[in-house]
Image 1 (spheres, rainbow, N blue to C red):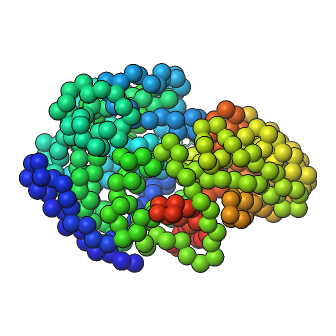
Image 2: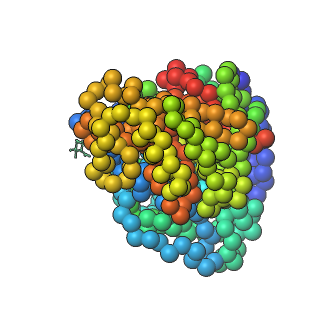
Image 3: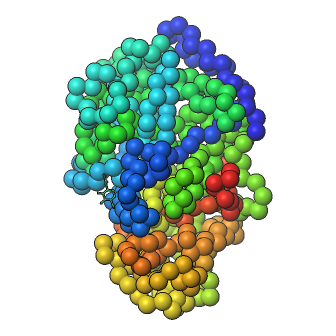
Length: 438
Ligand SMILES: *[C@@H]1O[C@H](CO)[C@@H](O)[C@H](O)[C@H]1NC(C)=O
């Protein structure tokens, strides 16, 4: 692993343009909401409780993917759909913002663009247990004018005030945030303990926030492909425009998942690679067919709602897979053909195919399922990656109907896969991995 410490040169006032950038790789821990490191950890919840809650959250969270940052002054693009979904995220990450670094426990969200935190005075913000970020106490905080490129990267609207870049962000669940766009230093630590400082990172400082945010979180880290996301802003200064993650199975609450940025994250060994497109700030792939071991293949239509080139988005923050109605019904048929276990029903009616199981040996009666992406990239998924416990002695196929929304390759399917995003090609690689050891 190459680790070179960055020197952040914070020049005074207007001359805050360049940082000394050196080759670097580093990783960030993804804290699963149900792990003991998370403030949401619930000691009395069983693995079935966690699995079932994740299915329920996912059924609502998928809809949030459409939420986007919007610059103030424009037409309000989003009529907030009232949908009460408290805390419907899967992962948290710690961000260290400003000088000196101030620690913020942020929701990791691949469906969002911006990195934001509630900022002092925040008189109209949701209550949080941790203190608010105070920009006056950070020597690297600079507000951005409305004509700056980063401000222009937010969806258009005329400047209400040229000296500041105000944003309004409406989630589809009805939550909203308002604030000003600034730049800040973000500090990360390599696994060897070196300090890496990234300067002039666009950062939203909320003056207002309301809705279903949890008091136990203090901000959000947008991990989409938009120019203002954490990923897009950090990757260009690395030794390689690359990041990868490896998600430990949900049943393992002790080990941590991580995101690795730069060359140290490159997926090696026996891997498959498929081309990727960035569409509407999301990472899209082309799924050609789904093959059920011992049964037939299910072809996948080339077009999908919301996408022009790909037909499915790959998302680490949505639990379930979402497939078009026709594909899902064929998949259900194929799986039903090879599974001899008695059928059961999902009590929440989210998942269409469930079976009664009496213990571990029954899992071996469930098939491996292969997702075949363009370029003959076959990702063979074990039953543990394609089925989830949903009730006492009930397991269900972890696929729901995408209906009129964009299909999603979700995070249960990506457990114990090392998934790498090469942003230069751009392409995604997959390799089987024990994520607890990576
Ligand atoms: C913790 O989990 C138990 C068992 O599922 C549940 O009854 C309880 O409400 C949970 N507590 C919190 C604070 O979520």
